Length: 255
Image 1 (cartoon, helix red, strand yellow):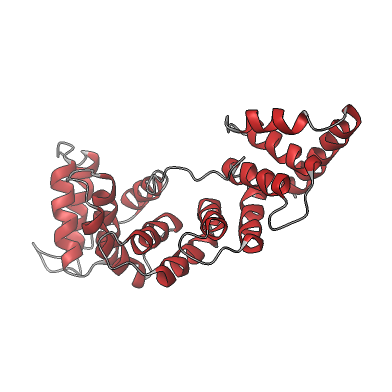
Image 2 (image 1 turned 45 degrees about the horizontal axis):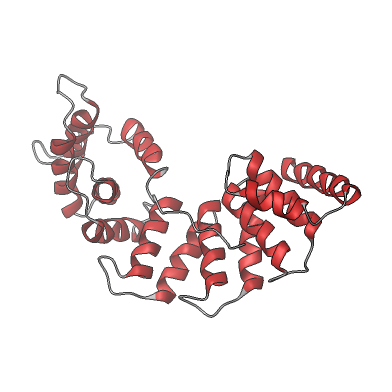
């Protein structure tokens, strides 16, 4: 029974945030901006191409090109959006190497999300678009983990695998626990594994059963096999007690 590390799709969620920013920001300031080439006018036109509004046909390529112009002039919001578009290949060929400096510069100016911080962390971890730097990768993952159960699970896996940093199962369990109580199904499964193996915390089959079942009911199918494996090692009375543990966990999660 092993810990699970999901395939990364870093900007799966961040584009929801970008959509909000495109919808709520980039409001033109014609009374105070220089005519024709102001950043705000460029971004507003980019927003219209992005959505296909204001008499313009939707064109993500043109939207990207305009955001990139604004990004190169130092606008943090445009850097954030252009970096995200590079990251997923929207309106431009996907390039993690070109995505990194844009997202990084935007983050240093305060334009960031947990998902973009994870993208920066991943770039440092794998050396994509920047020299590999494990310390900086951990720093950015830790920032993201303040607001992201996905980042918490990522850190848990990093500390448990010992591939990039010295193995530290106690730290791993701490991050898995945070994410599990935030209803992150992969972390719920991973926490079940740690209770099953006794790594980083006490061996406890009833708690292992509980977290596997919660992960399964939360939509994580890989937990089914592990749940059956643990159940086979428990008596009917112990399974009934494990169901009580689930009730306790769910009650705590609702608080």
